[in-house]
Length: 397
Image (cartoon, rainbow, N blue to C red; front, top):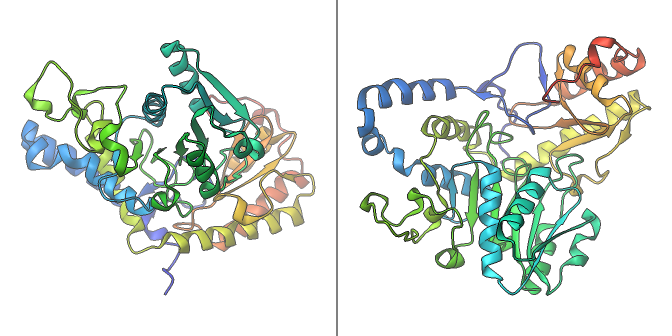
């Protein structure tokens, strides 16, 4: 039997707000604040440093990683949490290049999230070994994978349009060519079914503050395929990735598990919030979430296109080719989004002209989707966006 969705009662959502931005920052899960308070007041407050043992703090990165692994089709022990997504991209890419020392090409696509490309270029500048970051159009990237490529670094779901790569086909092409495959699951984890075991990629990374609702600054995660973990060389050899951190040895010995991808001291309060947030996924199958997501996004597209002829669909029309978001292009996209937010419908804007809307079936239903489309229609029909107050650009769009 399909799980009952939505589960709006599991989230603290303000009255009068239709939240279509969980693909950027998930809402506050009910119980997360109490969990954080307990960690601060009861564990830290009474146990002090003893809480690393008595409250199980040291094991939290792996324990929470295992909970994420169940949503990613990954095996127990293959996912650990901590640091930021940028750091995890850097770690995975550096390890991949070390695994292919005779190759000099990193392949990505022009739709990738900029920080992934920034981190790749920073790594190559640091190495100074003549590597090249090569970019292809998203539709052409698979055909560009050959025996010269050391690593393929792709984001599964495009952050602007929601376009989704075929992970099985791309990974198979990479492995057949002898390249290392790295997937960024920032817009996939908790939103679309992922089966890392079936995909077979060596690495996957992602953040937890979007569809996993871990809160601003929530720790990232990294997955390493179990059969290669003992040969992976961590470029950031932090003390908590050591085989015996408290032996205080002067020389580094990596842990014999995914623990070696840990760097510094974990953010315990943030991990506790993330742990509480993952409770919302208990008893829910990712296929049910995906089916509900497609139904909501298809409804939104129909309603918007019936009301807003000035908008152009920027996402793939085929729901099987897009993630859990819908994007429309509009010349005055920034102003239109500010007007929409001012009327209680929260999405976001991505340059140069993208109105972006995320669909999270855990707390979103069809009634809200139709209401959002109606309000968007009012904003455009009445040119309500054409107000000087909506032209001021905030630092976060």
